[in-house]
Image 1 (cartoon, rainbow, N blue to C red):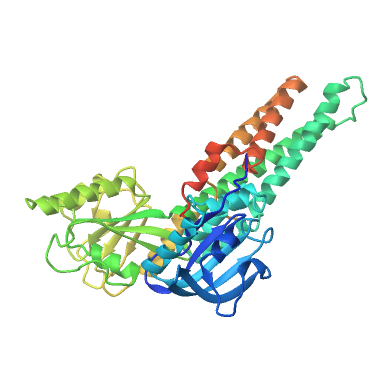
Image 2: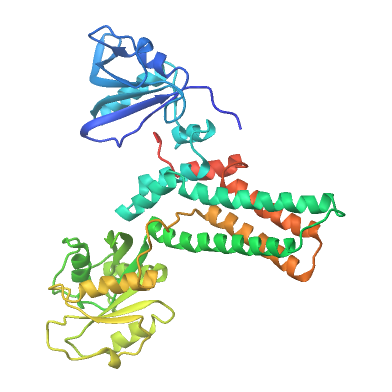
Length: 458
């Protein structure tokens, strides 16, 4: 795969009003292009300055000063892309950022594609494919735990795990090749059992990585928790209480919530997508009907449902109908308004509940226990160790499963007397999957899939 030899530029900070904005250029002509639009009151020439230095001056368009800036000059190979990089630190705002970027493009740079700075870092050998993905995980981290996990990937933890698997597969292949090439050679007694034990150990290690990746998927995406119930049972009050802010409008009038509301919350460092919904009831109001349809769609995508009833009122036919409609879902039953005298209990309501809590969304009673219960359901009662979580993309999980299946077939072959050639092919299949996971055999299509999720400027 060819490494581009042109110079790219992009805005690397969010566009909007703020203290500092950064326009970045990378490539063989980055410094020369930047010098054409940089004026230094001290007469400094960017082409002559030392690497990794910062210089005060102005960006100019002809005789017109555009902005007062600090320009960082970083020379290859000790840069993010292993190319010459210039970063122009200006005042953040749409006009100065775009004007400076347009000047760089006018003098020979090309607008960077999404993730192209990181792609060049990969193509130039500074980071591997797993670290590329970790960069995106760092940018998109929703909690401190998610950030810590992404940073551990960025420093190569997952790469080291894959490298150890690949090296072991390589060793086993070499051992088998000796047996194939020299069938009359004396093979040490127990070597076949040693091979079987090694394959079983490798299979278990890969399966463990897949399992740890499922926990990482929760960190990256967040589970969808949908609050359901009939009107006026306190769903929006609960939504606000869990968010600890007045996000949803709360009134005594039934049908106040006409749409789904979604926010991200963190419970013990784990992100969750919390979705408030319109109360389910028969209504002639066209707007409320639309909200109820959205509630039904939200129920279908829910990883966990918080089904809220009003404990201070008797169970109604509507409650029973809604409960019956939740069959097959993971549901926590919440008996809200526990601060009022109880008129019902969950025994009167038919349904299969993961857990049942008496709460008061109004004064916060029971919410601590509810949060702990949510974590219990997601992680069997224990938050995963920071060092144990893996952030796997779909393609990584697929390759790991592909390797695990190949090793499983090799194990079965050894146990049932298959030829050593067939066993060797299965181990080779697993080995090739491990090289793809390291990015050694990465295709252009795979790279396009990975970098499509990056923003321009990263």
